[in-house]
Length: 340
Length: 246
Ligand SMILES: Nc1ncnc2c1ncn2[C@@H]1O[C@H](COP(=O)(O)OP(=O)(O)O)[C@@H](O)[C@H]1O
Ligand SMILES: [Mg+2]
Image (cartoon, rainbow over all chains, first blue to last red; front, side, top):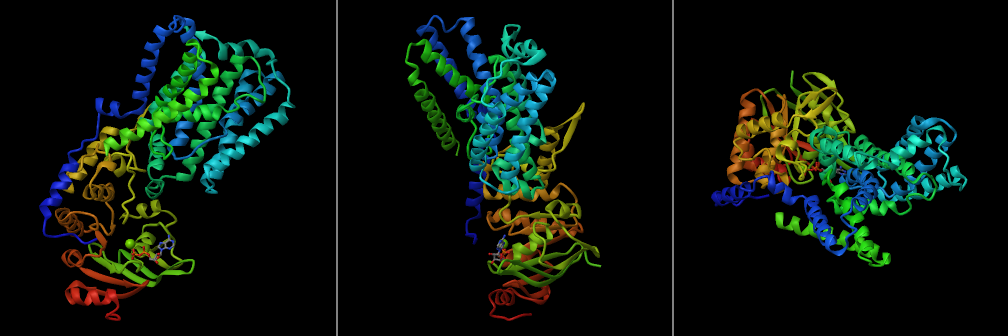
């Protein structure tokens, strides 16, 4: 490119005016973060609901809301990592069903809860590895690979379960159902798991090279590769992390429901993806917030709960979930344009 | 013994012959200009030396030892740093995060290793000051001007003490004032015993800082002369083909 040599001062001026745009820190970065705005929306809905329904603010109702969204929140933490690499994982709902069956069969045969947990997580790890391998090394589109896995994992769950429900979890049934369904200090166990997982992801995104490299890959995979980051291996690990978050959610969820069927988790992938996106994950990649996953999941559950309590027919539920999804993405675009 | 010695480097992408039997030697402390028209093969040659591609044929020697760079890290280990033509930065990360990408400084807490943000920001700030760039380590690359992005890409080469720095069109997208700073940096690199290969379209840049100039035309090296023995007119002729070879 030729430089117009006659006016160096103008260039200097432009450079400096651009340089004045500081990186936003503290309060500024809070205002820029999608989860913050979604959190405000949650508070707003909460305030409105206390006037609409006396049942809303009860301990029982809040307990139910948090427990219900926690399963999705845990899955959305992993989904956010996948979306950060500009990928997608459509197989998490089916994987939940498959994990339910492998876990159920293991425990039913009397192998105990530790073995059940290991088998559940191994199932998830294997599925994640296959997804990641096909996407990273064979350069297949994430949408296609995980859509295929959505069908295959569900089918294997059906074959393994022989289409029967499992409700006998062997000698550790009580402990298993306590972990998934009970609470400690008034907070459901699954919410504790979500809190711990969110904290771990927060640290991972901010303070570890794994997190930074995943964000870098989402920003510019080519540049990440040139910087010596093992991009393929990282992508495999990201899909494994996503699947294993689902494995963990499955372990808690089966304990909570007290039974395992091969139909578990149907369409959950849509809820989980919506929760991640509402929480600020950008399908173009490169953006991730640890707090986004639980906050996005919370908003969706809150909408469901509020419609119920406000006496609006449940048929409207999907409409409002969809509406908020679109509004969240719109909000993000508007903020991005403002920042540029 | 030369620092870098390329012998008969050939590179084909399918039917395209990007490079055909290119020889090039660079001595320690030498600044070599590499010129040529668009598509002449300059970037391809730089990427081969930086370990992005293996040559189809030919040999690379570093200080007399034959090397085979399978990936960029191998070249970096051998003391070669590169500034890519398209800069290869992650827009969604800060300047400092880009400078240290893939080479993050870490501190250990128990069995875990965490990114040492303070050390990274401090060192990046020092490097930017050294480059006389007003780039701030915490700024997001997305919001940066061409010159600041350039500074980030160049700063990446300052983390280690490389023997050879490859710069692919480092002044193509920046302001006049910043061009002067990049050229000053290249001069300083040369004076402190580092070798530099400067790929550039800009005749004045090459004649200002280079000791020698090599010209590529359609994958062939058509000239390799000391700056003192040539002129911008001759080099222009060599680039366009008006002069066959020199
Ligand atoms: N990765 C690639 N795949 C296929 N062809 C390529 C690739 N990289 C470069 N080329 C081709 O090689 C030739 C030389 O390109 P390049 O080295 O970028 O030229 P220059 O940097 O001198 O403008 C061009 O014809 C270009 O299209
Ligand atoms: Mg080029």
